Amino acid sequence: MGAGALITVSGVTAASSSAATGEQATTRAGSCATNYVSDGWVGKYGQNLQTIAGSGEITEPEFSLDGRKNKRLAFVSTGTNVAGTQPGIKNVLVSTRIGQIANDGGPWLRGGTTVISAGTGGPANGDSWHPSMSGFTGKGDAAKGPSKMAFLSKATNLPGGNPTGVSAYVANAGGGGIKRLNVPETATGVGISGDSKVLYVTTDKGIFVVKGGKAKKLASGSGFNTPTTTLNGAQAAYGQNGSIYTITAKGKRKKVTEGSDPQADGGFPGGGRQQGLVRAVSFHRGGTAYKFGIIASRSAKGLKAVGRTATSTSINGGGSATAFGNGPNACLIVQVLDSGKTGGYDVPQGQCPAGQGDVTDVGVSTRYNYLAFSCSRGGLYLYHVGGK
Image 1: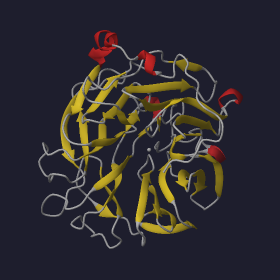
Image 2: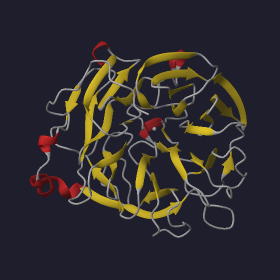
Image 3: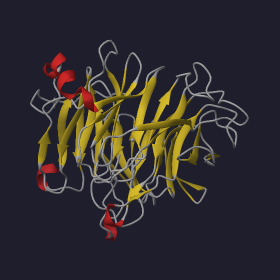
Image 4: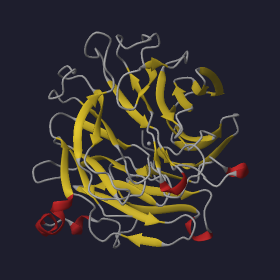
């Protein structure tokens, strides 16, 4: 996730199928249907597509949430072309943007790549995944952060150990400074607030909020996963047994809808009692990508089917843009929460190169000017949608 509106307070953040219950997305202009696949796309739009990583199984692209700058792009890879990794072990990596980074949504240029999930004294000895990165937009549209990120790991040689088999960790956004979160159950998901101060951890027995290093259990049960939170961590969204819920840092819980792998926007930014509350979630259900507007104008509120998909979804921080994969296409559908204005994109905002299969995962940037996606036969690619 990223932030689609000016944030004048600290923070902006974020990112098993259940059967559909009747509604299906229709094929329409803007839903990135398969009929948009053509060799002509590469000739016309291919100059906006670049390779971020080319080897190994790659998933879970996640942009930093620092306005239009998007300084970092995290992802999970089994690639062996980065120092500090072992063959076949999943690592959380971060590529850093280089060059002159004007605050205008210009092309994203890849710099160096760093292993975030590094073990003590050598490579991690177990898989790491589920990156969640902080960052926010300050006064004057200034980018702040990202300073921290969180992830899950099975490795036993990370700082703090791994007494639960799968633990949640927080680290510096550029690498180093790994600390295990003191949650006493097996972790199934983790999400960090935009200001890096609040984390939500789902486990095999419930959900916790972590502030100042102290963990508090908010709810108990099974099937908790995929927490994502907001600019200041006041509220989070998560999945549980095929349903989607929101929960506040004080434990007030509400069911939103049915679905899987929810991704929360950056939360209401304007201050007052709604500051930091989830405004919208994207998710998938029965092969369809959806957005559910919670705090929104009348036309943007409630359940919206946005396209067919076989992947998880991603939503930007303002809740305007939902991204997902449809075959070899990376798709982006826009409906602004405040005004209800739609912006159908009638071509894919990225396609897997020939021979690289179908899109397997997506990530959308703060102002939805960049879309990152992985492909089934390897590779992580970034498409520059344009200045926003």
